[in-house]
Image 1 (cartoon, helix red, strand yellow):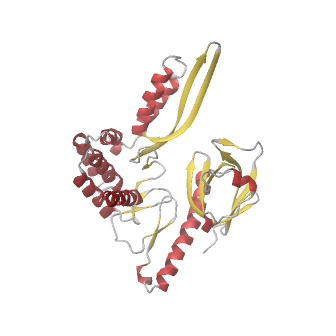
Image 2 (tube, rainbow, N blue to C red):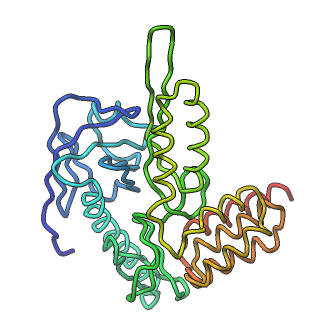
Length: 327
């Protein structure tokens, strides 16, 4: 693989939301490996990456060799996070994902060659993060999904929705605009005034619920009200004008009120024809409301529009497994 240069940075390990040291450590990413202080990770040991502000989260293979310090900050034995300095965490993630995706595609190419299926090997490049997207053995569809940055694009033409803005919410599992919000609470004990806060990464619909939660819990002490109001304003501004009503549709869908949500989704689909994320949300609304037949039809349309849309593929797999257990 052609070299893409080196990327040097400083970092601290993160454990339970806090950095573990006062001083920073040296890190370097090359086209061969990722070096974190005394740890050298080959790219085939990095399974997933996720960015949250200036923090980069890794899921790694159990076979990765780690020193004692890094082993102590692992979560569930396979995940750890670093806080990145000198460069943007998102740029480091893109660098790593470009190499990991190219290596992964090459391994699949070699497998297909051994099986006599070389003609089925097919890839494209994500216009957002430049990762290699392996489309081998998949039907050609209108959209392509990048599992590395969650961008949905029309192959070799344009980005439909950028994964840095619109992706699946970790909280409600629906496609929407995702932003970082501070969940802030003030408390008062006799003569002591305190504050607690936590960073949340949720969609516009979930942000609305978070607003009401923080607003009413802070109402007694007043001090936290401005933070709650700012949260609400932030969730309402800066939306794609063509997806402005997505949060409303998702809120109705989460309550199973698909009769009210479906016309909004149909309106959004006029602007983004057969968008797999919108079709998934519409299907979830029907599923929650008990209309399983139409829900599955929406999921099938989503896959017909984007054959590698992993969120729906995983959803269909879970539904199938649940049905097998019942039967």
